[in-house]
Length: 291
Ligand SMILES: Nc1ncnc2c1ncn2[C@@H]1O[C@H](COP(=O)(O)OP(=O)(O)OP(=O)(O)O)[C@@H](O)[C@H]1O
Ligand SMILES: [Mg+2]
Image (cartoon, rainbow, N blue to C red; front, side):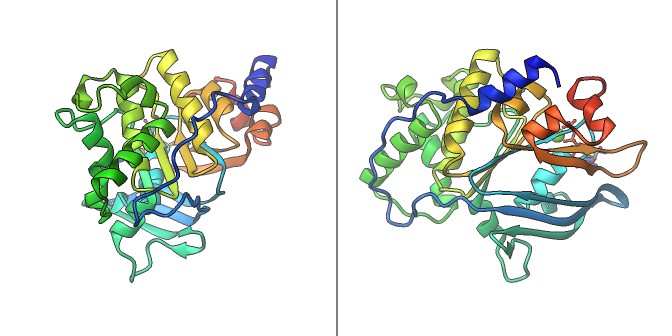
């Protein structure tokens, strides 16, 4: 790995912007943060009879940021959607294998789909706030869907806390009643992160969350990811190798060669994946030689 990349990996572990202290009172039905370990066990996936993932196993430990990297079409988004039961919403989609949240299979027959969704949140490539809804209401929008009751005072606390954690509070505290759609792209993405945090997920999945953002907004989101990793397990898909090096503790390299289903070629600590990859395809990919 080049010196540049070494510097990038070092930068991950340097302290970044500190979170403001937030008040500790919480809506009654929302426990303190409790990040979970997520484990994929031999996950394969199909769209119709087209197999797109082959026996993917990966542990995504609590309090760590896991980056999923690999060329377009290798199944990263499909894998991410399987991790919170969104894959099954697509008519032709099927899967095999298990996804364990602190050891319990989210696909067990007795488990409700909403249970997995509440515990495993998702932030998408394109920020998707409710544009006409106020910033305040955007943050609390998930509570009702998640079956969480909260009074006005509780909501006020929660809105401040989640916007603070998402790194947006200072920018919006004087205009909480303005529409979410009036924010910049980077602010909208942080609003979406705040909205996800409001239901206190134990895992947060992020699919290329910065790909539509400018470098400054990207940095701000990366700081947010770094700050959040103590309280929610983060799994992020990124095409940006510098970003993977900056924000993640471990990486998994996905590849689908010549029409074969995507699989994990190699995974390990981010430092090892960039400094000392074991597979020549990983070396080529992290050094930008394909994909
Ligand atoms: N809804 C769908 N119906 C049918 N095939 C799909 C669907 N979504 C994805 N696929 C196929 O599944 C494979 C994996 O796609 P996926 O979107 O997971 O890749 P990706 O690694 O996220 O790519 P990118 O980096 O471009 O986002 C591709 O061959 C894709 O064409
Ligand atoms: Mg994708």
